[in-house]
Image: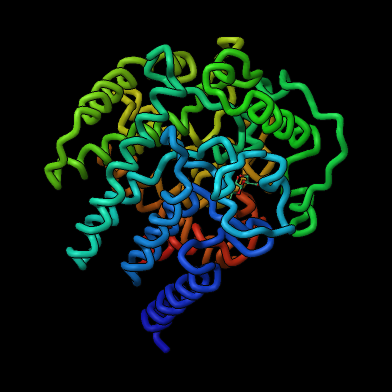
Length: 429
Ligand code: 9WN
């Protein structure tokens, strides 16, 4: 076979494999991230996975969203995990979280990339009847979800929402959270982690982190999920630059989808105002000296001075001004070349960088996808393409893993992973 023919058959095989992974992880309308390790429906995983489905099965893609929205709370929150069916392969399950709704769930959310995924799905969707039908059903719920973020997580109208749990960030043990999490008490009761039945402990968060993750889960439950009490007393409150950026981008995408179908709603004016407010507040997280947007501990008012990939999502959100964008583009270039593959979750020059421990160094494809889109938006197509190609090289080398060792490219965490397959489908089809 010629080289080109080999490359083409390689791509075709990757596409087939990615489709098979989504089908394998399909539990009848929602997709688990991977079997065993994560046996439920996760919020941002599902949004990204729906994009993958959209590339070859439009009805199934919309179904993913429908089931995710079926777990929406009355206050508008879309939880981070929906426990559709029982499973004993994951901890902590619904009993620990303690929400007694019909569809059991966790009591926090996750990075709200959903509306951005939907905007792309709207652009891709060929079946216009299906599209119309689904949007009519979904848009009011999405509006409620975005209002929830701004109302409940920014009650003082600062323009910067707060997050109450590292699991909410989706970047669980990022070194950005180390100091804020250290101030949280540890639970003293015994528990049995199930993640370590599936994955080597060198790739997962440590016990000291789990002890505090669980304290926060109990704190929410003990406060009956009352948002005022939690806002006043939660021992962990951060301005997560990843969530702020993803929310900002998704709000703009939501407004644009609503405009495209001529949806009128007073709530849209509120969302417009929130977009402007975040644009004027974001510089509080910018460090002129380091030329970087940091996360911030809202309790101590200190910036979390470690370079983690969430900050590059300000490009995805188009929150960086031209000067900041140039600095972040230059940093992305050196960040990319500092490890063997793509943009790692923690900058390799940081003393806290661990290339294979979860969010402390490994490469995550969906984050690289957002960074690449951001660079494209700022008109850096070559760098964007480079990030895409070095991300795809990981799949070529190791397959569809949850994340990848940034130095060796070795697949880490769960195998046959839905969002990795979905991003590959998005890029390859
Ligand atoms: C806790 C499902 C999720 C992702 C998160 C990732 C990981 C869970 C865990 O898996 O978190 O939510 O138990 O480790 O950090 O981003 O959504 O793939």
